[in-house]
Image (cartoon, rainbow, N blue to C red; front, side, top):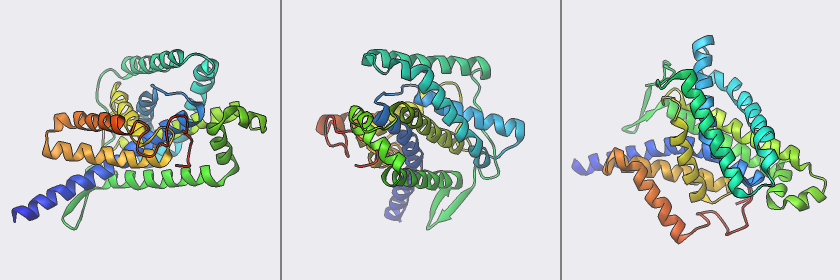
Length: 301
């Protein structure tokens, strides 16, 4: 009896971690897209997720839109936000030293946090739906319905995005740009336009993640720090610029976080996956799917 209970607890933790990891993967794929093509680490990535969550909440508050319907508005709006950020902040500093790029995106992160604090105060917001607490029971396991939906949407988007990069002309151009910007420019690829597209797509994916998260998570001005930091861990763990790495890394972090919360302590789950992160950096600095320094590309590994 005890053994069955222990196995049931373990399986429940793994399933819960995989569902959470799917959303982590979606957020990390957006970050990977930006880094792989534009070659800039966007430290405001988490704050863009925060904007998407607030936007979904406002659409529900003002128009009564369900989050799964609101995503059809949130994703394009966030794409436009990403385009604006790329053109207004990132593009002018692309030729600057790395420290300048870091200061610019960190500054944007702080500005967005304080703007949200001014507009929404420090209150926690969420969208209560009929399915927010819905649970499916399969084989003795309790599975959160909105988390299951978020997982399948994340996997579908990740797969579709991978095919887009592998099979379409635009996707191949993005991969060529990630491989060698100068060579891509000599071949007639519109570098600046694709930079804008890459940043917009990465931010659009964050918009989808925000809409999927709001039924099961609260949003508040600093929520981006939590998810943004986790996304960085996922990206480095999977391998910088690797789409499959971002997907697998997100699932691993989700499972590790869930198991740590059950078997160690909920307050220490972040510490555990950061410890795993450090171990991976020491043993395999290029990440699980990385091929080594200077080989980062999008959608191939």
